Every structure is written in structure tokens, then in C-alpha cells.
Image (cartoon, rainbow over all chains, first blue to last red; front, side, top):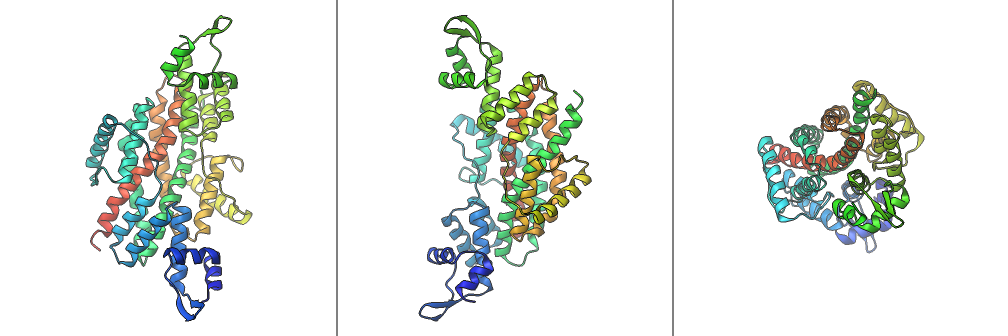
Length: 209
Length: 209
């Protein structure tokens, strides 16, 4: 197909497709004349993956380029998922050394309980969890962390559901796309359902008072 | 205590405290001279609640004023929690009528399965869930909604943990503060733990490939 049709099929404007081509996020089409090229279904799929990572995942252009490079190098799916996950937005918090040690210990305890391997200081997801634990403490709400082990157990159940939904997909590309969309939209969906469940639990608990 | 000490105790700058006084977010202190007033522990507690709602909860000044009015009117705890929850940030999405009907049906099915009462069109939490469901569909990832019922079940488990953590607290004020902090930080904590659990599930599932 020509550029115009690629744009229609993918829903991505022509100017944006040209930008992705320049940034190396989309492989060049097969050249059919000095200023025309032919694209195929693989370009449509790639555009959808790029849009999912940029728009839904909030991953940077550089981050998307890294994920695509890993897919094109035929890196193992687990490795590509890891790269994609690192790009997903997570809150960052400044923490002092004493608080960090305390929070890292709490996280290590939970990881041991759940059988999770941790990567250590540079993993942005672990950094984010450490920052959130420190915020609970700073705000004087340590008591709320009594639910930490329950949360971790429910996170394992969620991850099981999540992986089950993508594991059967045919390519690393489609697994990564579904994982990014499912993780980001899934966070929002779960937050919404949790509030609905809270409303109902609150009505049962406090509705008569 | 005087204004300066209230500022030290609460960690809120004097100028900000004066702003909250003008906006009615903090009751006036007991006047001891034409330009001095005395504050007590109830002012420290109130300041912490205001900060939790503004900074952690992302609730607007007007929203905080509503929650405080409900607390001061001795509204039932469930009602105050409901007002606080409405102010909590949730993603908003534009959806067309056909998509809305489809999503509202999906939500109604899940609510029936979980025994949840729904409020209908004006509830912002329900609106948010409907918007997220429509986004899954628009992006062509309906298959990911196969996990919807699991998510709802896990949301019920989360809400049970959440309510358990705040139910024993002594006042509506402290319950609301803990619920706001726990809901907002809890969303972020759960998102982080879910990613850690995904990393480990992914290693088991795809690590050898």
C-alpha cells in the first residue's frame, strides 16, 4: 500500500508517519520510484505498537526505539517486556538514605515472601515502590502498610491474569503491545473498580452510622 | 499554640495556613488579642487532612471544602467517604453514545456478579470505568477485557483490605484522611507491585525463550 493508505489503515496522519520514519520507529517501505514507497501489514502493526507505547504507555520516543530494537534483534520476549516496562511511567520520589534503607528492607521482606527476584538499586520499578513506601511513612500513615503483604499477594494474582491474557499471542510484537496497553489501562481500570468496591464495602461498614 | 508553632508542628508554612483560614479550610483560632489567636491539636490534625487531600489526593480546594463541611456537619462516615472519593482524580474520556451503552452494559454485568449497587450516569467513578472500557475497545484490545471479572474480584479483595485498615480509627476525620492517603498511594503502590509481579511471572513464562 502507499503512504496515504497506510495512514488510513493505521489512523496515523501522514506527517506523523514521516516523523516516525525519520526517527527510525518505522522501517522504510520498499522503494518503487525515487519518491514513492510501498508499505505492508507489518507497517500497520508496527504503527499500532508505536502509538500504544507513546499514547497509552507514555513511553518516550527514545524508549520506544529501544523496545523496537530489542524486538528486531529477536531478543527473548521476557527481555523485550522488561525494556517496555522500564519505560512505563511510575511516580518518582526523593528519599533520604535512612528512609531508603528502611523501605528497601520492607520490599526485600515482601519479595522473599512472594518468591520475587529483585534487581537492586537501579530498577525504576523497585525505586518507585521504595519511594511510595517512604511517602506512607513521611505522612505518618505507616499503619496503612499493614496491608502491604495483602497487596503483594493480589499483585501476584493480577500478574497471573495479565500474563495469561498475552501469553497466547503470536509474536513478541503483539505480546509487548498488549502488555503495554493492558498494564497502563489495567492500572486505571483497577483503580476505578477498587473505588466502586470501596463504595459498596463502605456502605456495608458505615452505611448505618 | 501560636501561628508560628502551628506552622512548625504541621510543617505547613504560615502564609499557606493564612490562605487556608481565608478559604475556610481551617477554623479560626481562639482570638487572644486583636491580632493574635491560639490554635490547638485539632488545627494540626485538620491541616494534615487538608494537605493529604490536596497533595496526595489531588482534590481541588473546593472539593476539600466540601469534605470538611460534611465532616463538620457530622454526616455519616459513608457519606463523607463518598464525597472524598468523588474528588479523587480519575481519568476522563470522551465516549460516543453507542460505546457508552456497550460499556455500561459490561459494567452492569460485573456489578451484578459482585453484588455492587451502581449510582448511574452521574457517578464520576462509574463514568471513569466506562471511559476506560471504551478505550480498550477503541484500541482494538477487547481481548484484554477477558480479565475484567478477575479484576473486579480482586478489587473486592482490595476494598476489604482497605476498609479493614481504616475501620478501627477513632473519628470520621481520621478515617477520611487514611482513606484518601491509602487510596491514592495505594493505587501507586499496587501498580508498582503489579509490575514487580509481572517481571517475575514473565521470567517464568518467557525466560527460556
